[in-house]
Length: 254
Image 1 (cartoon, rainbow, N blue to C red):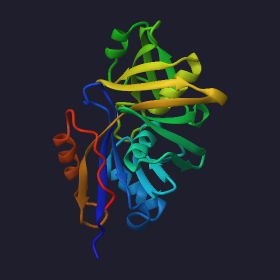
Image 2 (spheres, rainbow, N blue to C red):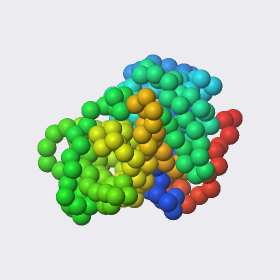
Image 3 (cartoon, helix red, strand yellow):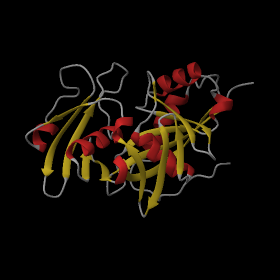
Image 4 (cartoon, one colour):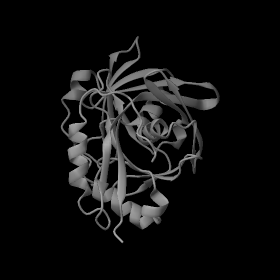
């Protein structure tokens, strides 16, 4: 029997017009399609997105997050995206429970900065300097380059470079780095990252930080070959067709 892979494709942290955002692939029936870590890692590597989410229990919000090369205990844009997709208020992760809420056009999660993987946060003198950086800049290790656009208003210009040899030259929208920067600065931020993605943060009580953004559903891709041999091309086509503003309508689970 061939394996059937259904992928929901989202753009997370879209800009005000609904464009941009970081692409997220969500595998809803993960225990049946990819039951073991090795299979999941191979599939995430094949898809090539910055993160892919494998849903183990949609009712309890149990999910597994993977980059093309490794699993992550926490990541911002995958959790905002899957919270929106599943329309769920709690996500269960190894680091703890992540609470989610909807507020108009924004989906928010509450998390702790210490859950985020380490990043180098490097401040530049101006937004123009950040925009002029090569992709990636010279050096090693995960770099989050940022500068104030309007310090009084909390507006930040940022770009993110994983520099981990997995094919992701620049990360379009990085929730984990936004949490770290918010914790470092101790204030709410309105971040414009990448080509035009928007991330919002707000420090809360007991060390929690809310992270919010817009989510746009771009389509569903299906591949019926073993291990999804042709899914990457189909995914790319669906994502391209879904560019631009669209209604925020969740697909049915069926």
